[in-house]
Image (tube, rainbow, N blue to C red; front, side, top):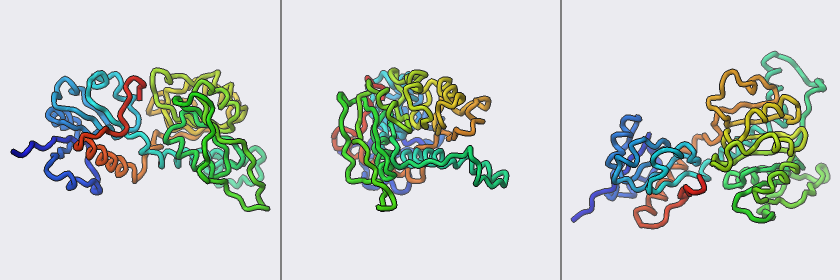
Length: 340
């Protein structure tokens, strides 16, 4: 007697590169293009591949065993009924590393090389070659501090080292300061025209030593997930622990940062500038003072978006689906007790 195929509901659609035929008649893929379709098709599903989890889960989905989230973050499902269920949830942590790291470096380079000022001058057809209030910096020799150094932090560190930067940061799982190997990635050099960068070792610190990291960093990047422990955890004390005229970037979650404290630090000139992809409220309200600050770049939560992201997440789903069918442990299981 042939076993009944496993019913898999996909919210949206799978890319053409997804190896659906490799699973043969073991599975049945059902596509839900709308919220209404998702709510109805999930009722008989065993597996759900989605970003949004409908409220019908778990009370009306007795067959549902596993949810693969297309997102890396899981804060949007905390507080939903599914969070307290025994349904296995896996997420897409690490799959947005390439666009996130590149987007962060784009913001950093733009701030350091005064690109917003140049673009505004271009809009006015103004040649600002001799303006003394426009200061162009270099990343070479600067220290990048990553708050929440995980998979995306690894990708960002890789790029930063190629610019000759030192990288330090914090990680929850680290108990003592630990040197991070640079994997043979050296900074750009062409001696004798460029002096070698003689920087201390790259170090990852316990989260409890955040202020040590902030005091050493010329640029601070937040890549923390949003949990009960991290919400509103970066406030006035943390901004004052940073170097005066440092740059600040947030590509993690907006509600990790106390936005009023950040705005005050920018308005006072204590921070030299900020590149922000996430905010306490999204969309960012039109009356936010951040919109009009010349030293702030607003990015509408698109750091993880790229043409390749959808394919990459779908390929990961295929890997996890294979493991599911073979009874192997799944990758990137959400640790509900930790909140991510």
